[in-house]
Length: 311
Image 1: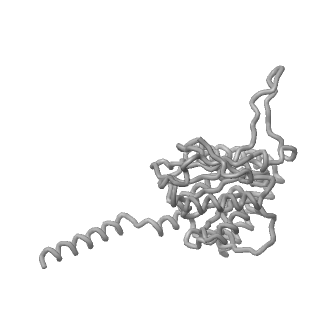
Image 2 (image 1 turned 30 degrees about the vertical axis):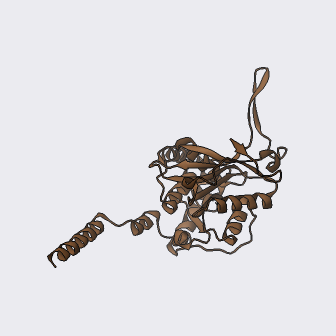
């Protein structure tokens, strides 16, 4: 059952979600799709999480008020002599469980075209009422990097403990805003910690849907929120797409030359810590103690107990 608090509210929420203690204090992941979502990074990630993991919708935003249908026309199928299967925009907040049953919140769907400030205020209100522990934002933007190298990630947000060491390159620039960027600012001002992971997508592939960019985003998301997320399908798709890109690139000498120049620039910058921060594997190794370290701690603890018994 759904209820609406007032006619000005942009969303409809399931009854009782704000009183449900199991929904309080969870991390919130924001993955909004839009035409400038390079590589389809955020949109694809949201789709995979909803397809692979158990989830239930908690809040539904009013698509008719937030979307400009003439700017982004919905798809519809013409089948022989009639129209069918319209794909209308949706924007919902879900409760999701990872592969080990650990819950988190996910705001996924189409980025609003209209009422950005009111939408941002609504999301901040939801995060406050649900006592969200941290908000993690996923995005992708085009950069002059080659697809043949590890994709860099630009980390941002107020939770420096979750973003430190990821991106060595720290530019300062005026860029076009997005709902996600406005959400980060508003959430930080409301005292809710944020961490964003923007995958640097090869510029010449930014308009294609690249599962490898969603995979990179998922890996950083898993690390930041300590979630067990389903990466197998994305990993398999990434390998297939990478092979296809390589085949097309090898068949065109001009593309090969362009990629070679990008590789040289990437390697030079990486050598000067310009693009790549601490590798994800090393970050994980720094967070999770090794088997020997765990064993040594247990042995020391048992030794203390034995000494206490003797005393």
